Length: 466
Image 1 (cartoon, helix red, strand yellow):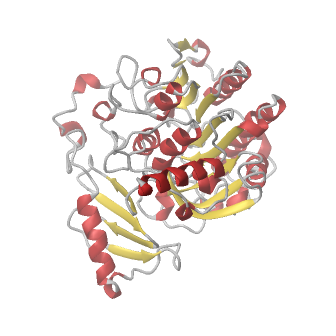
Image 2 (cartoon, helix red, strand yellow):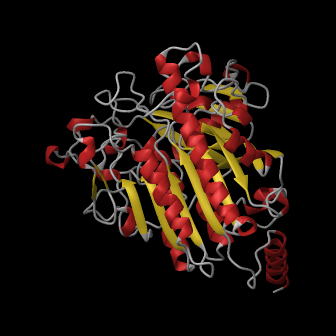
Image 3 (spheres, helix red, strand yellow):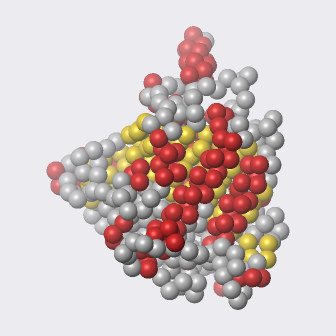
C-alpha cells in the first residue's frame, strides 16, 4: 500500500508539472508534417539557400529538437508508426508496398480515435496512406471527423490531380486539360477553414499531412517537381530544378505561417500545441546545392540518419520553452502517448512509445514517472524488394544491418553524427546487444513476410490496383 501511494503521489506531481490538471482546458493540437523534407532543408537546421522564415520563427518561439526520429524511412511506414504508437517492427504498415495489406483495420487504435474519445474534434488534410475509400483504414473510419486530400499515397504524387477525397469526393475537372487547381493550396484552405470553424469550448486536433516537397509524377513535370510558380527564386542563378524545389519549400513555409497566424489571431495561441516535422528524410534527387540531409548520411529509403532523423519543432507559448534546443531522443511512436496524456486519456498498453510531455515543457524525462518504452528505437525496411534492412538506436549507439545475413555496422552518434566511422570491430559487446534487439524487436506479420516480391506476394491481388 505504501508503494502504491508513492507511485500515485509521483503521478499526481508529474501531471501537475506537465500542466495537466483535471480542471484545465484541454489543449488544441496541430501536427503539421511535410513529405520528404530533409533534415537540412530549413534555415533553423542550417539551410543557407532556401528561405524558411515562418518555420524558423516557429522554432524561435518554441523548442527545436535535434534528435527526433520518423517512424520509418518511407511514407506509409512512418505514418503508421505515428498514428498507432507502434514502432516499425510492430506497426500495420512496414513498407510502402503492397498497399492493401498495410491498411489500418477496425481494431487498430489511432491518435484520432483516442483524442475523439476525449471530446476532440479531429480533422485532417493531405496524404493519409493508411486506407482507401471503402476500407476500414479510411481516415474517417479511424477517428477523424473530416479528411480532405489523398487517401491513397500513389494518388498523392499528383499535385494537379483531377479529384481529391473529401468526406465523399471533390472533382477538379479544370485539371484534366489545364493546371487549374494546385492541390496544396486547396489543402491549406481546408486546414484554415477547419481551425476557423472550430468551437472555442471544444478542443481540436488538426493533422496537416502536406505533400510538399515530395517529388511529383513525371507526367506532371519533367523535373518531378510540380509547382505553379518559381517567382520567389526567379532571380537566382540556378537551374530550373533547383528553383522548383526551393519554391515548393517556400510555399510550404508560407502556409505554415498562415496556420500559425490564424491560431494566434483567433485567440488560441496560449492553448495550442503546434508541431512541425517531416515524415522521413529528403530525397536523393534533391539538387546537391541544397544539401538536403545536412550533416547526416543518406536519404529517404535509407536507415542511416539521413533517412530517419527529421526536423521537429514544437511551440506552445507559456508551456513549451521558447528559443530552446533539445537533444532529447524522441520518435514518432511517442506522439500517441504524449497526446493521450495531454488529453487526459489512457493510451493502449501494448505500444512502443512513451509520453514526452515533460520534455516538451523543458523537463528531464528520466526524473518523471512514465510508462517506459523499450530501451531502444527500431526500424526495418525492404520487405517487398528481396532485401530486409534493420537499424537500432541503443543509447548513443546506432547499428545498421543491410540484408538478413549482412554484417552489422556500428556508429557512435555522440561522436559521429554522419556515421562515417564503423566501430563494430572494437565494440563486440555492443554489436551483440544490437543483434539481439534486431532479432527480438520485430514481430512477424503476415502482411509483410520478409523477402516477398511485390507482385509475387500471395496476399497482393492484381485487381487491388488503383
